[in-house]
Length: 291
Image 1 (tube, helix red, strand yellow):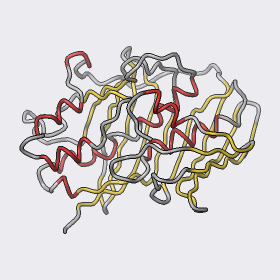
Image 2 (cartoon, one colour; image 1 turned 120 degrees about the vertical axis):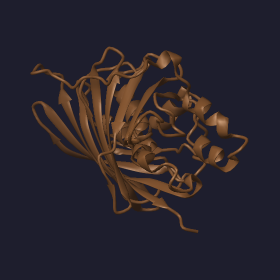
Image 3 (cartoon, rainbow, N blue to C red; image 1 turned 45 degrees about the horizontal axis):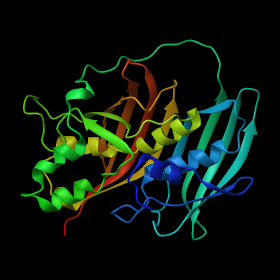
């Protein structure tokens, strides 16, 4: 399935129910011919949500990408009802193709409850209004670096708009060291009234963008980017506060470490009022082909 609009993405995220805890999902057919990790995150969260009471909302998820997914085959999601307590519910989701698990995830849900409240401060970065989209930034290399342009454009889709604060092609000439930091504004490409669960599922999908690319930032110019291979290994996400994805959200990412062919990204997601709505952590495989 192509991903040309927000409606396309919602149709992919929302699964077909086969049985009480069994679901089937179709794929966004990526140019790189492997299932996009964010798609599986969103779909698995959709499956888990379909098995909990309507007054419980996801507050955390922890997933492992076990095998590459085949974009030509549907994915089967089996939900295990682990526990329903007084305030929390826990679910385990296994995504499978050809009888083998390609992804496993635990999700915890909670009733809305009062408690202490504090948060970190949103970074002081440029607002999204005057920034170029990622596609506009990439367009400048189309003629003189067509292979790199094609590889970078592979991430382009029609459901989410991204506006990077920093230039995604070259290091900051004013920085002493090109830090492993990336700030990206993002929002849905079409205004639509969405439920809280679907908002979280769409944000889970989007959270798989840019985390591992941030781990590459300090090394730009030291390798051929057309030979770069990256793949998610694990992904954790916490939902702190409500948000509206129809409005701009800032994805503030840093990479504290890269070693042993792996890179780590930690992301904080804020709304334009500076409210911290989510925290994301991911580690992934990063390799450069020598051939």
